[in-house]
Length: 569
Image (cartoon, rainbow, N blue to C red):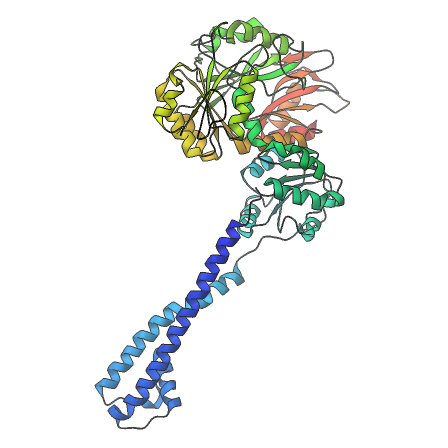
């Protein structure tokens, strides 16, 4: 992400301090040489009974301190002269060991160290430019690898740019340059780009967009924290304004509930319309995440007992239990409140299964506690309030009514929210360590609680699950995947990103000649989950099922497999 040049300021301070030290050492060294020369010029005639010139005395001191030799002055007759010479040798060697590395090492390091490139090796067209390299950019690039799209990363910090260069040698071009400098825009070939993603604070983002809008027809995507700046950035020239924090908050809320209007749905195959149990879009295929809530009929039953495929014609593609994914779960897998199911099938069939097995009892009052009312917490709050859920917010400042003012890490503050009576807790603070500890306390206060937590760093995800979270939303990954969905919309739709590089995608069959499911799976190594065509919607298609022009094919596999499969389609 584009941030103020704090690292550059730190380097400047370090360089200034280093320069000051060099000056001090040089002054000490020169003072030593001067003092030793004065002493030796006076001492030598007295101890050795021989005259010596000032030049001779200085020459002897330098020879002694640098241990290069003595010429015609040896041997000394006086032990006083010998002792003084040894003092000079020890002092000189000590100073040389300090001064020489201090003077030469920085310059030698500067000469031999590699630097990031300033431009790609050749001209580019219809590529994607990412301004600012961070965790979100990493997630975005990983998703874009599924297609043959050239990617240019622009990074102003030299060290960060070098790391990106080493990481993406074969997958992306990295440019080291200032974000707002016209030369950087030229080197990134922004004029011929298809998409430009500007990933920074609102002021910097606006500055960059205003600088490039007149030189390119590319679609500009502005990535910001606060969506309230949407209209200003669109006025500056952005086609899309996207907030990973806002999206993360909504996803946390949607994973918490199964209601008549929303069934934890974010991954849609057949339609861009919201899923509704009252109007489930008929025969279109959907991939839906369903949490298992207390009081539902599915609770504490096995996959085999539910028998979703035989009873409802839908497939349990993935089972997610406490952060661990199981692809194609077996019949003995037990479903509890830490389980989330990924159901795949026709919308009308999924709606029937939700109504029969996953809806909580009517009339139960659902209470949600939201820890943190920043951009993420506020988005989750508005999503839940809009669905009729009672919410209590914990924050350092009064935000909503009702709310509890205080630190979410404080057990007493959490108990003030009556957390022991709540069904849902959304942990949405900006500090991962605070989120982990808050999750740990919430789980101990209410073991039956459904906890949905936000993470900013990938390393925090496992810790949050171990602390007791039922679902963790990794904000950079959500942001990267959402932006990749915009960029790849004309080619492939990414429905789901899974650990280990697995993805579920939807791609149209573009060939005029038909091929079978078995042919596509053998050639690419992917698994065909379903097919939706003009006259049929199939899950678990048979090996000899033909793929016809215009069919939507739902695929699951690793990035390399999916990339090969997309090329075949």
